[in-house]
Each structure stands twice: as structure tokens, then as C-alpha cells.
Length: 96
Image 1: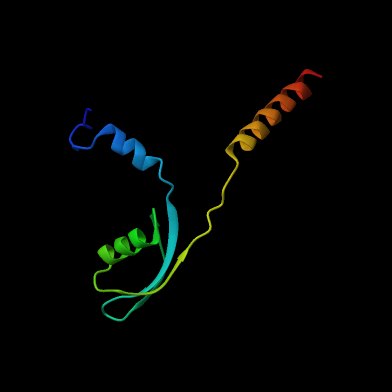
Image 2: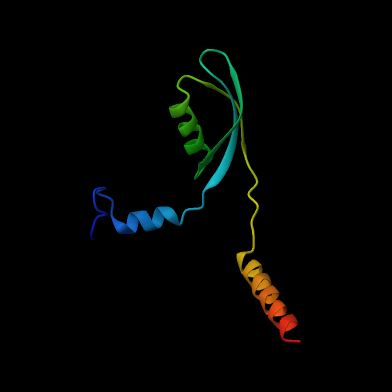
């Protein structure tokens, strides 16, 4: 199986990782110097990964709160259909 140039990653590995749904997590933390930081948002596959990312960015911080943020699921198909119908209606109005 071929690897991606310069990465050593296999194509199947990259494709399977991209199909895993990512979630957003909101954090409130206290830095090692004691300053509170609110509204940190991290995108990750699960809460453990999100906490690991926060700990990497803010070493020795205290996580005060972590909550999964609600994603706004949009129906892409209906949006496209609405755009097409709008365009076709505009074309009909011009021909009258």
C-alpha cells in the first residue's frame, strides 16, 4: 500500500481517520499561574482526546469544566435543492 509523500502514512489510514466524526468541546481551565481561561474550544474525536490537546497547549493546567458543544447539523441536500429552485424561479420570472 503506498504511503503519502513525506509522511509515512498509508492512504487507507488517512481515509479512515477523515471519516471519523469530530466533535467540539468547550473548556474552562485555570493555568499553572492561577489565571482562569474561559471559552476554549477544541475539536476532537472524544473527550479524552480533547483533554489531552488542552493539556498539551496549557501544560500543568487545571481543567475546571469540559462540555461537549452541540453541533448544528445542516441538511446539505435540502440547501442545495433550495438554491436550485431559487435559481430556476428567477429564470422563470425573467422569461415572462
